[in-house]
View 1: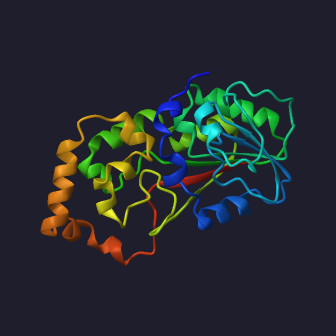
View 2: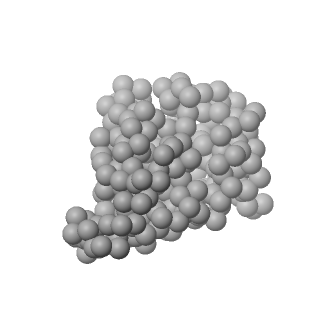
View 3: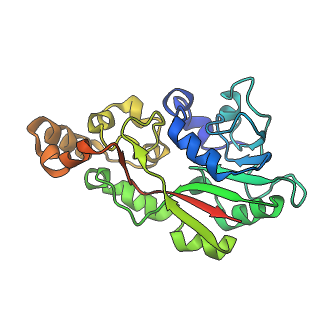
Length: 242
């Protein structure tokens, strides 16, 4: 099984370090579940240490980057889970669903093998963080990859959807994590930690405009108010079913 992250995950473990505040929110949402399935587990970010975790990840390169002490990880995809019905107390899927080829099938499979909560951390494509003003291709990609918020109730039944605010110094370098650190997006190494930048082309013009706006102070004129915030609604959402 060869997957996209076999190629693009080169700096993932270094740049995508789990943020403790996001970890706490995920841990709280899992409530008292003891056995938890982590789908699209990657290198193991946000897997609670005090629960029995089973990880699913399609990319062998991401599996190889997991800590030797991390939970056991099976190479498989979300839409074909090798488990019986109601195997786990809960399931989690963190910033992964946009990579699934069949999102509805994947969620139905997760629900099949879970007897309790299904927790997703995802993104609301109707949101337009300031970065999309410089790279409109990102907005188009969000629209193409991300399910609409209304899709989750169609696929999972009743769901609770709440914003997950991103701390200004978030240690996890996902796409919109640097909302208060705009210079970070000028660094190709930082951009390599986000799959979205691997998926779009022709970013030179946007990079040049961002660089100019930071140098002239225009960025601060437009978005400087963000520097006063400790956390920000960049569009990330926790979706909970069950």
